[in-house]
Amino acid sequence: MRSGGSRRRRAPRPTRTFVSLTGPAGNLGDALIRREQLAWARGTSDELVVYTGEAPDAWLAQLGLAPGDAVLLRSKRSVPRWLFMLATAPSRPALVFEAGEVPLERGNALRELVFLAETVLVRLRRGVVVRPPRAIRAPTQPALRLHSLAARASQFALWRDATSLRIAAHGQLVPDIGFAAGRRDGLPWNARAELVVSLRGKRPRPGPAWVEAVTGFAAAQGLRIRTVVQVREDEDRARELASALGGEFEPWGDRDPVAQEALLRERYDGARLVISDRLHVLILAALSGALPVELVPAPTRKIADSFATVGLTDMSMDAANPGPRGITGFLTAQLTRVDDVRRRVGEAEVRLSGIEADVRAAIRSARR
Image 1 (cartoon, rainbow, N blue to C red):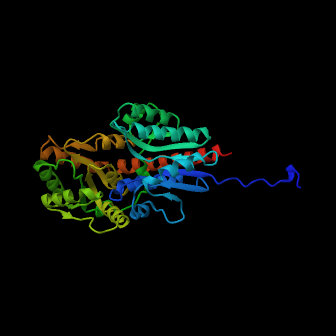
Image 2: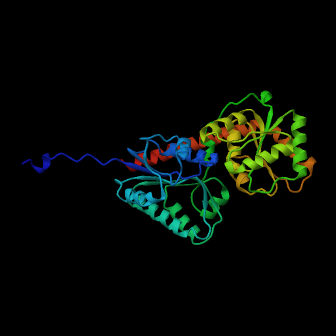
Image 3: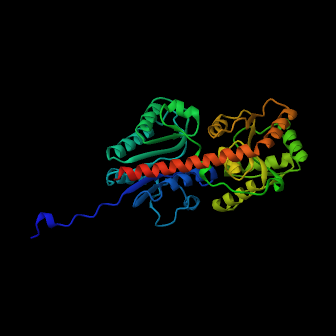
């Protein structure tokens, strides 16, 4: 028999990174931030475990996940397997939660309790927990208390707006992860000939003063108006606005989501201004060198607060009260901000690149 000292050591079990990537295939903004979040997780372990919930095949294509890239858990029935793999993972696992909004309404306490347990489990196994740039929505107790405890137990608790950081009382204020999606040169400024509009279908439609101001501004600047769709449920609103504004309506139709995103980024490449009340429409527009403008009745603070984090203020206006002259003046003033917008977007991209490097370094350090 071989002596104990001569026995071969068992090969180490593969390291694991867990990342949650749920979302609707019909929302390109959700796909955008999940894809950038996935980029932070790739290559950090021998084995990547991805939970996508009930998402269809199109969602995997949007994320850029190919067969063999990861252990895919693709239904809610796989949650027990996710928890089992997390509990039995080799020491020092990494866990990456979802970027975006965190709903903390009444009824979400049980979910937050599960997330807290996952966080504690990973920390007890000397692993790393990453909460990418997020925003708190509708905080209520006890969900907020549980979420705050989980944030405090995480090495990275990142918030895309100052209000969420204040509510959580722990973490860092950083740009929305969408700003990491890659800047594009787009067309030269003088060759940009469009004003692009993309508004939510579930909010009140802007009134006559808004229509008069937008059409008048576009005519004065020599811009064509085009309405586009970045979220499928907004398609009817885009059609209505094109008719009201005398612009061109570009439907999503049967185009697959990957092709639709590519087309939209081309449209933003050729726009001077993009008007929207969707955060990631405006982030993609800014990445393409267009001027992002929120111009709707009674806007929420979501866009203004998220852009304030990267140093861009006064790009949102409540269109409920000012007449056409006030709206036109606001839009005209935005045209002076090209250099500032591009500089701030570049700084946000650099900041996010540094945070990704910090995340990777933390995971490496935990495994030494």
